Length: 521
Image (cartoon, rainbow, N blue to C red; front, side, top):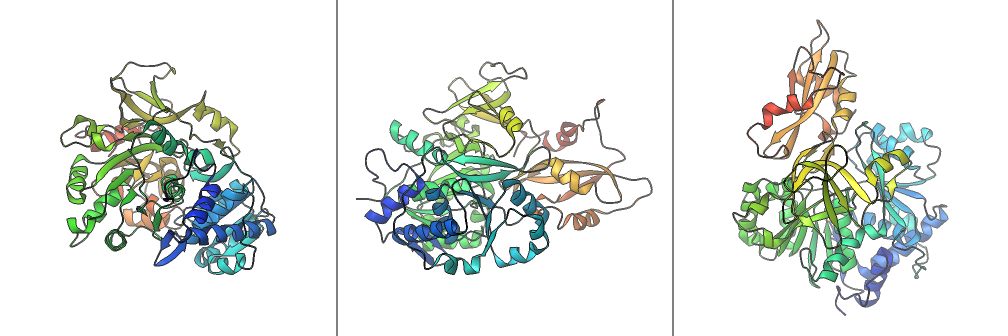
């Protein structure tokens, strides 16, 4: 039986998929990371041991289990263990600061934390403020923590509706919200395409998949889940490094990968990289931010692979819209589109009153998908505002053409995306306003050829106060994650506001985007 042949109906859950592959292709590599390999049998048995270790630590169905560290095979083993037992994995962006990490641990109610040694040292000062956090496991001691447990099969008591991950995404209040996704979120696209006989995103038995996007992002854990369910070899990097990525693509014979456009650009800019490096690459799935047409043209020509663009949110369980390989034709006007819904998925555009608009009319993008989130953790009002009658209100502005293709034009919610990382202005402003010289500030996204967008801060200082861009950037270090720190500052006498006091962000952004077709990059 080939890795991708899962029999009638396929596996019901992530745990069942790995168990299936452990029985039928036990020696096939499942996860490769930094030269270490877990076969499907090893992954299955290790996940069983980890599941029993979780139970011994009183982590049960519904318990939140946090992971804080770079990508590793143990991260995915822990994911499978949670998926098998009903515990909910809470991956934490390892680039966040201790206060940001503390918020996630507190908000999620995580009862167990697996973390790298450097993060454990940084968290020493806040452990006493997290009474619900019981067991803390060092990544260095992870193997011994679960070693000695019975590796025999466990009954899988979960189903498609069982919560499996809780991913934190920034909100307009500046505090990240926990998006709870069920196991169905990781099967919906695959099965929709299979039922329709479409190969927009497909898998072959000998595929080697590069996980370019970190696992604490929905795109990363979704892509890894697709590979694990398909039974292919999945190559993980501790963190994205373009030189390492090129080496893996060439040396591991990578055939398919999922990346954000900024990663594509960095890969193509690696010294000495050429078409021969991509001889075995057959498909590139990209998303996370819009792609420049020049970059897409360059990538298609250099890599010689089929390309598929995906669009969605953490709240939609990752992708709901796809621009298939057939639409990636040179000169096609559809290259400016995000794509169209998968079979059984839907998109609509609404006006400010919630009513439908005609094709070609810009409004708020709403998506209906069987992969949609269960809820924002502990935030019923926010859940009701975003998930309305089965539709996810994205906060993105766009339009549908006559053929049902979606075009993204702007963001209603002011979000900035830097190399796939979502940043909300309020979060940066809340940190920047704490500087003693800053009277008020406004943060916007501006075009950046390398990372898509850059964080630009407009600052009004107190009368007589002095501060330089270097002063402000230094002040923000340790207060917010490095990727959120503005790379450009403009000093103003005052921040422009409307009569009700709301910052006129569009006025601040406009000068940077006037020559752009889209107001996102």
